[in-house]
Length: 351
Image 1: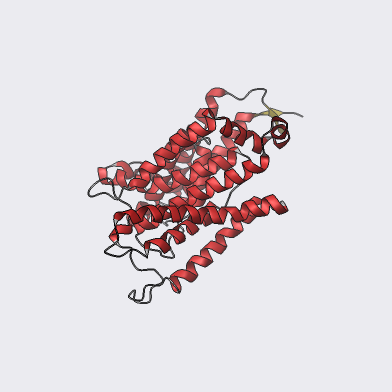
Image 2: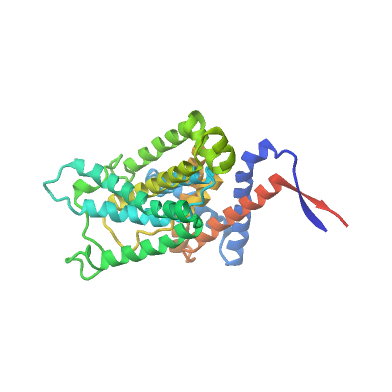
């Protein structure tokens, strides 16, 4: 019967090639899926891998989708490298959007462009506050951060629903559950005329560089990773595992909150019940496909945004369900897990 046996040393080549192999397997399974649905597989693959980059405007929309995914994934990489399992980035993203909207709605025609800074800082604060609840319960009561952070997502969704149907509801909005549109001064600046790409893309790239320097070029980054992976060794070396817990969750919450603020003050322009787009959950896949490395996550965020746009196009042009986006995301994750299993283990047959 087959059994898994740990490899003495995982292949260095396949440690980086595994995500590419997982993508190739996802494409093959996708072709079979399109054929099973009675659709032209080449036309289906075109929706996912060619249409999102066909024109300059399409590339801009790709970056709009990739920006929040990348920002959230950067914070999650900090958590996962510290052995802290923040699964509730979606809730922190929602709270960041709520806090940012609260400040943005204070702006009017006489407000200067400086209001954008408080809007983004409010989003960061919202994410930090929501993540600190998970950190507090884990630190003081040893509660599972997986369950706590995940359950807080549903609380955040309920808070959002209450606000857009009550205190923040637009009185001129024909009874739709949404806030009024933000004033132009409270909207984040766009980088190009005729495109929705905004300064969030630049902030995401700055975050990539900052995380790389912190993790791989500073003593604090080394202590952060050791404090999470080996608390006993960290204490022996004088590192604090408690500090690693709080730092990881607060940084992750801040990143998710910033992504939420950029989304409502950017492409959306108001607070609506549709702010939860699943970015917090998809960013988990982005982080792992990118190997928890800042540079790798840039490419995986672009790939994941192609899945989002491809799913929308497959719905409108091929008549397929929009849930196909989630199918492709799940296929990529499971293929990656399968490849990583064979990367670290070999199959042995024994009688």
